Length: 306
Image (tube, rainbow, N blue to C red):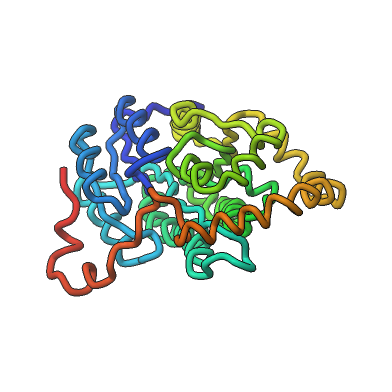
């Protein structure tokens, strides 16, 4: 059943750019009232001004930040009807040679951040019998070398969503997981720009694993999911084939095919990562300094605006 977003309060994490920004724009165009959450205050403030939204500078791995964002949203709008848990990052490098802090941070943001977001928002979603849409990935179903933390976090996100769906169904809350393949965002473009070996790997993969989808189309699919409280969202729709063939994708045969290419692509990728001297893409926002939250009186209460 399709439900109008008009008047619905939707909280979006990772809203400063990419999928989060475009989904927020489209949801606002359909009448939703938005709470924008992310790590880039200047971009969030500008977007909130365009959309008539509230915004919150927030690190999704910080429970106090999330509590402030939820409290601020309720103070502004009175409730929360839907949450898009979209914030995510992708580190550079293999487990053997990558920056361990960046690899661990990827899991913290993508998986632990989703868990913290759900914990902060679910009391409000239970009160409104609302909807939680968690952004996983096509990487939930298939592993790629050089992306171990990302693949692990997104596989974990899918199963987390599946379990939480069972936990809250009796409250009338619906939970969905979204599984986009490569979307034309800064995150994907940065990876291709930073790592020619990664770009070449994608070129050799069959669709949908090797194809890129526009961010606008992804946002349209996500807004459709918010309206219809969908259980699974695949972007593009052909990712559903990966979902149903996931056992084959993790088989010994598939592993042998990928390993053949990895013999050359992985050493090249590791060399390219070493030359970057950083663990993330150029547009990945750093976490907010903890001192801002702890030492500035009134900072949390004052950092959301119409």
